Image (cartoon, rainbow, N blue to C red; front, side):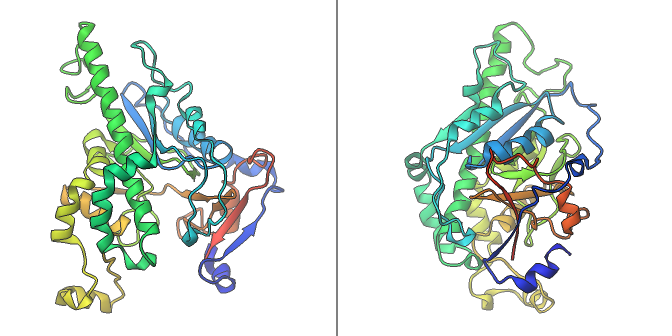
Length: 372
């Protein structure tokens, strides 16, 4: 396994750096079956959320273009990010040096996208830069409430907890942006005398324009092509932490709506029905027996377990797909150990086949990193 040797060497919260820029370029030609394009006539949207980091243009964006945009060329693109000028400090992730951000790089993602300009829409209509003042004003009540039940496994409150709420807000923000466009687009079609989806032959629902929707983090590295039409509800099959991996989702409009837009409304239900208590003495007998066999309950607000409870509550049957997604830390560090255990990503020989081009990084070196 990829982490077998490194976990012997590394202690918690340390990194091992490996520069693979000298690897022969032919290893980029890793063969993988790409989507067949049978869904090219269907409407779809690709929604991106989270930070635009300093490595977006050199590392994350090329992987998005190659593995998300290219397999889904007809899809419209939307993005929500935060209007920051430097990276937030995160001691838990060892991101302790502020680095300058250029959030306008977000427009590189939407430039030349499938959406047209026939009704006065342009690339800027598909991107939202939200200021932190706006976020804090909008989510202050949620932050104060949920901080009382922060997940203790993340350490002292409240850095990781607040980042989770910021991610939820970004997901909600990009979903709302897409819905605004859907409403405008369908109204435009009505004014043109066209059918807005009630019998137009394309299978569109009269209440929404897009048939299939994918949601993706914008600050990561995607290793292989993803066809968002291959499932009605899918998440990547790694790093579930007794829940569902929360780095991406794709599926039908209805299922994507549950994943993206019902989190804040689900808080009451989660606390009343599903949230495990801090005091393990309050667990049921059955839950205590499960703990004896090694099951670890995630108390408080833990992102992956929250998402699984959300999807299960609304009856969404999620498929687990072998999509490997590597996190990218400040300083152009790619966490290649993220998918350890997934076939094709568990040895250094495996991960080298998916590395970025050796000139990525704008002339500066990037590192493939194992976090232990």
